[in-house]
Image (tube, rainbow, N blue to C red; front, top):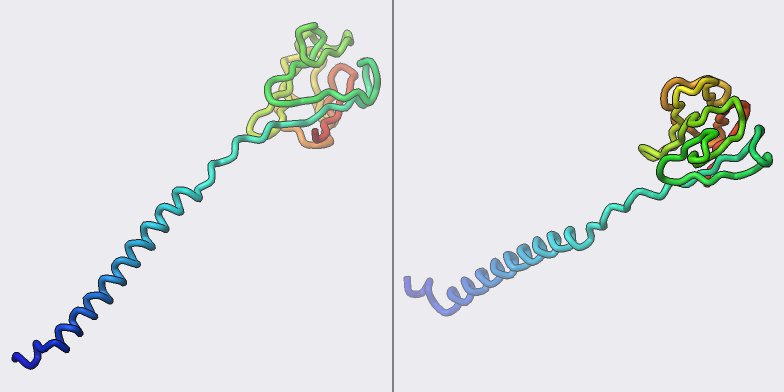
Length: 149
């Protein structure tokens, strides 16, 4: 029994314990690094992009055809009233005819129960409609086309 516990056997046990200790240390260190890297590398989510588009006057009663109206975030009211963001001086346009608002990453056209109606690509709308690039919005004889900003 004493021969089995000699200096060679003790040295072998110490070597085995040292190898196990090194593996446990490396495992713990890698686990810690992986966790800390996940926390530091996690990029913040980007905020919403500011919406940009423009309306081009195709035909109608505004000062000149080809006029551009910039659209951004928020609500853009359309009508005859001086308080409207987009004023169209035409007797066939209601004071507050319609509005364009940015929601869910798109521009939406909403008719305000106008007397002469609002059209998108020639179709009369009665509920909010999502606009796409190139859509033509008709309001009282005025046609505006949505283009990317």
